[in-house]
Image (cartoon, rainbow, N blue to C red):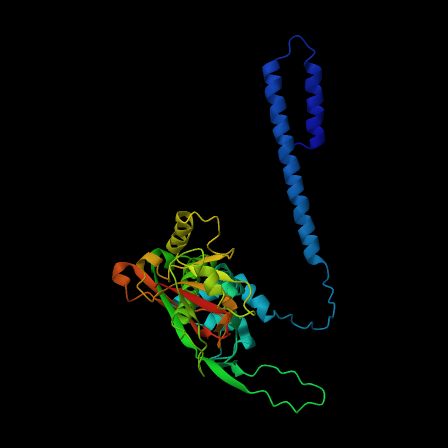
Length: 376
């Protein structure tokens, strides 16, 4: 095989031959192409050989051993673990199979055997967002106190008196307290999904399941709080706070009359009702030719759990007026939603069932904050 120098010399000769009239141009062109191909092959072989020599030389270099102190292993915090993709994927598999070994392996000492396994951070945030998006729940009082929560309230109290200088000693104030007890109960909601949902992996699976479960769970909790007001007695007792009732049809005076039954501590008032009931209020104002807001400027919060005025029977509540902070939800075991996964019960229908469960106590816990409007 020729060298690069020999190839270049021959190419120079060809350049000179091109000046001769008898030169065979086709033959010279073919030879130049062949020379260029040969030169390129030589360069590639030379480069490969040089790389091979470099690797051999590198492998032959003596190894320098540097002594270092053993570095302390960096451990992830529990929050970092719960945010990781690995934990989210392991949690999704745990929900489907009930096998928590992989989740506990990731948690290590943060989740001792038989201890509570925390949900991934993204799911905790999803639950909080669902709570905030519910117009009833985001206005009520929320606590996380273990066990049965007992909330005292002032049942009766003497008025303060004026003590004139030199006058007789005033008597001690007479106070009688009542006590509302929020007993935790299991709030559950079943939701069925197609088999295709079970095929989703990791975050996609959890997003699909929790979007529906959290919505349904929060709606159920809000409905229970509405029931607490509807079923509350009219007067206070030793173990219950009364909610006064106003018997009026939708009109420009119904809401203000209900609000007039509230204490000065009631602030941020709203009107809770079915959307169809709102139409009845507006219709009453229009028919009476009143240029008055029948809701007295109060925000409206809608719930289909209250019957529309037209569908309610005599004595049934069709609207609630007041400060929803007078309602309270207590989560003795935390606010996470426990998920139970069942892919067997409806397997013939190609459906899986998912149960969302929260442990919570709820009720009316503040005096003078709420009133209800009932159908006359």
